[in-house]
Image 1 (cartoon, rainbow, N blue to C red):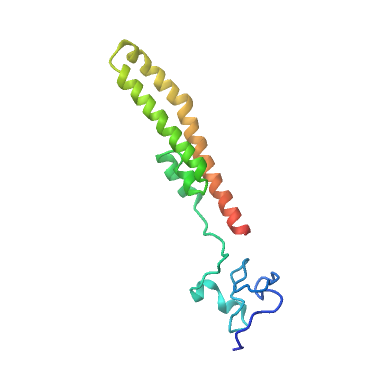
Image 2: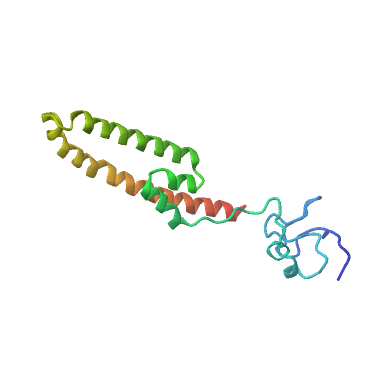
Length: 152
């Protein structure tokens, strides 16, 4: 074992240049003040310590699709695109409220009976492709989140 001192120029595990005052390597998480010369002995996972600039955890793209199927926008929120997710969630909620209000208000009238097939057609034309798009977008947004998390 050696004395606890920082490595002088670069990280011994990944070779990234070391900046003054860094405790952990921002690329691989190696403890630059480790008491051993072995780069494998001081992984942050082994010591329980996490570097301040450690990459964010990866998110499952398939898991982003599940909330998106239940309620549009929730998959985007999971993927880290909160503003887009909230916009989709509020838009969907307002469309549901307007649609239900229309059915309740006109549901038992002649206009309501005529409009029910129109609602079904509008549902198939607009909602199903929208649902497919936002599920795919939540999936790709999660992939993009993971790509950014591993690049930093």
